Image 1 (tube, helix red, strand yellow):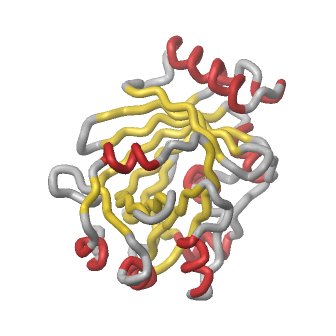
Image 2: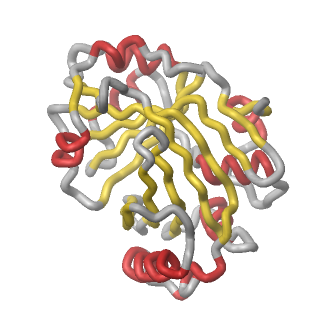
Length: 255
């Protein structure tokens, strides 16, 4: 399905360099919402919000494919499901249209913020990447729990989706809007219900203007994780972070 958000096309354009120059803090709070497209259209049409949309070569929606890595016991998944305050994710992201790849180590910090280590140009988890992951984990989450974990990582799930990015030009807020989400493991594929999108608001502030705007519409943040949902929807894993009702509302079998 095409990424049909009529209000997105009406926003002024901003380039990737301009977006990156506005984001100067390495740490942030991430707040997620799963909503219908019409809700996003209403928010983006709000005259009080000074939004601009990322545009590259005339496009405002881009394909992302992400491979998540975990050890054979799914330690990184279980740490998320058990709501450990400090946890990590390791993934390789492919920006399909631009043919770019990036290795990412994403850490959830004890205060609820997230921080990433990014390594451009890496497309698999070989010996050099293992060293990078171990160094990043030591820096971001110095715990014996994750010591030398990179040597035991293997592909665990793949996600594919369309992403648009907008910014609030008055504040340090970056908002990503993901649609056409497909989650898969070695044995099964599921997809997000087409009418829904996953919105993630990133800000140095725990509660920023855009989060308040969503709450004022009666919407509540969600703890939805693409990686954890992929594991739970395609494998018989315990414990679970998402309820069966929640997954059933958001996901359906993919063709």
